[in-house]
Amino acid sequence: MRPRLPPNVPLSLLANSLSSPLPCTLAHLMVSQERQEPALPLPSNSSSAKRAAASMDASSPAPPLLLRAPTPSPSIDLPAAAGKAAAVFDLRREPKIPAPFLWPHEEARPTSAAELEVPVVDVGVLRNGDRAGLRRAAAQVASACATHGFFQVCGHGVDAALGRAALDGASDFFRLPLADKQRARRVPGTVSGYTSAHADRFASKLPWKETLSFGFHDGAASPVVVDYFTGTLGQDFEPMGRVYQRYCEKMKELSLTIMELLELSLGVERGYYREFFEDSRSIMRCNYYPPCPEPERTLGTGPHCDPTALTILLQDDVGGLEVLVDGEWRPVRPVPGAMVINIGDTFMALSNGRYKSCLHRAVVNQRQERRSLAFFLCPREDRVVRPPASSATPRQYPDFTWADLMRFTQRHYRADTRTLDAFTRWLSHGPVPAQEAAAPCT
Image (cartoon, rainbow, N blue to C red; front, side):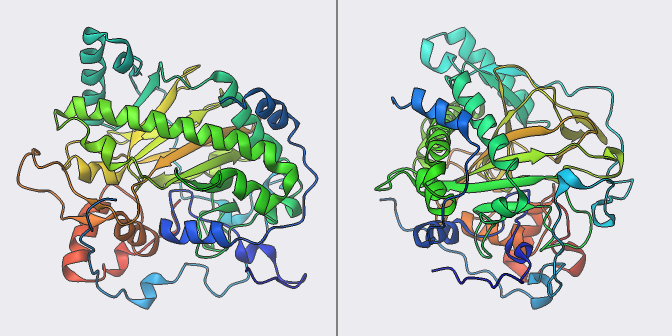
């Protein structure tokens, strides 16, 4: 049972998580969802989700080798804003940027005029028997993943109406009054819930965004996403929960299809990656970027690499995703009907360093709100991450569990292009130096 706070305690003390995944191990997430106390129903504005849900109602591994990481230094574990009462920001009502949202110019430097060349890969060739198309798709993925780790996919089989319903559901939720959204606030020690600007974790370089995150996995006795929405927000939100349950199921199917394509592009044993993620414990995150009065002075999401294996991103048509390539921030233009895929650190290790994770960020603008949906594919938390035996030697990274890497990126080290190298040193030699400790990046 969650403790109840008295009314005079700032709600934001319990809010927020990192916008680059994720603030805890996934084991904590699943426990928190099972134990969550139901809340009183909220007034629901989710009419679009209800309509969409009504139309879419159709439809044991070997024991792992667990690493024993060194005991970290307490000074590294503490969040930057520990012990301070966090401010509560309603970003849609801020007439100017508060000081905690200002980013140094070198980190918020302007976007390049040149768009990033991201191939649009037809993953439907995995099912239609087009061998020439399959070879072409594998070559496109290999080229993109060996450089910046980003590509887009079409032919994915995700109904456009489902994608629209999920984006509209995000709009419905984020347009609720702040007090109502705070009732879904993230509980400390978990990843699921509503966050706004990370003000409880950091005192500076806050992101101009709000998020709603929740876990997803198969095989539960009842639909875990529906249970999360009804248990947290009330029965009025069941239709919205059913939309996201269905969306997560389709993302899981798509992620396994992409794993097959990655196997082919790397020339590894067929089925290795797909089977590795069959029992995955993943994260769904809805992102909302309100219009910003001074967009050139802040960021919607700070520069980061994803520690997860794979991210599937559905953008609206506003745009804002950017990737750092050759020292320039290059925008990724939304392609109607396509989804953006990027490699994370976990898959970088699974590929023995052949495919790279890459720094990316999100920018905001003055006139339009932006929405996006990010599905983070994660292994089961006790899975041992190791490349196939057929991978080239020597090994670039030691065996580790997903829970080990997640703990490291959330408590000890900012998520950047050096994460896996720093993680390897940490496992071997103890806590990282102070300059490598977790910084207030997002």
